[in-house]
Length: 496
Image 1: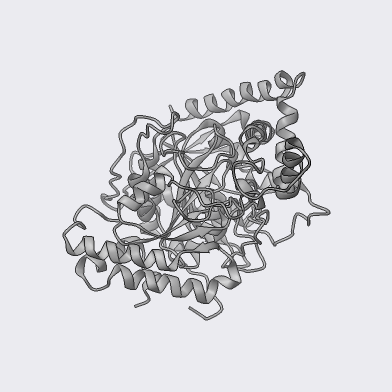
Image 2 (image 1 turned 30 degrees about the vertical axis):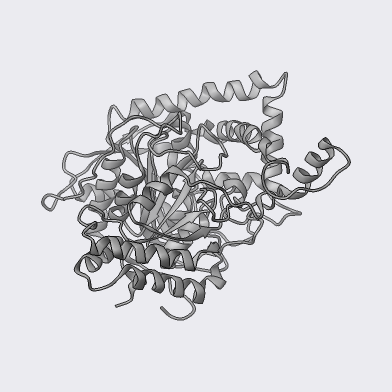
């Protein structure tokens, strides 16, 4: 039995029976990280000593009888390095926060710690979560465990790669425009972006405040459901968190057609020219399988989808421009000395922000500037309302929408150019299918549905109505009980 291959459910069963301990489970993951993460660079910081202390505490709690209502007790967790953890480095993949150790813990992480999860460390990310490949990290590129010459997706590529490579049972990410779902698709794991406001953003370093969501990665919908339930709920420290009951997601299935009565919409706007043929084929086959499980498939339209990309790249950079103004060398991270206060600001920001963060700050500042606000940012917000209304209308007809996560499988590192010849538009188009869910604030779930000819995972996305995560998880769970794509594992250098 290889402990790092255990799913959450399998590990919890063995822990409850006393056949393994949390220390043994945690040690196995730490050893695998030490042996193999050199080839992937999924982690920026590993807290081996702290993780073993937490594991011992989980074992003590279990011996004291605390495990009966604690399905996450003693389970290893990786945390994307945009979520703060007290005393642990938080760089957001940027040199401007190099060496920063926050004095508090994000609410979502705090809830999982209270549930007994063991934090292994912090995972790599595009700088301030701005990217689709994890190539924008100031601390090096993360590689895809299915093919180390390819990207793991972004910006939560470190977390997705860590789960796929069996470095962690579960991982946290953030999703502002697809940054959980696209890496989940590229790495062959399951990733959930909850409804905006479902999970507290307190302690999540802000990129786009009206778009950011804390999400989770796991091997299956069943694993992700447990984390989702544990970290959701109203938080007085986050004014945007919603006071909505946290669901205890019931994944029990009935009969051979467990999706009977579920209506799934297929939007024509998500099957476009230029999509990789193997991606479209795998997604359409998965939709047919959902139909075979009892779901009714309904053609639907989301007509304003075509505007999602330009709308997002006005709103998100505008919010980033405001949010990243606080990083000036005075309050956080390193400082570049200068002859005056303004000289310090200019030099620190000029030297410590990377190219993509600088690009988005400049775009956002321009969109918010006098004379352009109404023409750009104001208009984008109006179209965003139309996109949201499209989803609200569709969800009066269907329970979920099924479509691809991304137009292609994982692309090669450097495929969109290097720092001197980078093509930002080509990179931004990687998120064309995932951006609308963030603009509308609806939940999205990505999970594997096949492979392309090169052996790279293909993911499908389900989107649901506001606070409809339970329905998405049940639908994906039914699919995963009937298929085995989610059980596939990349072969690492040691053959394991």
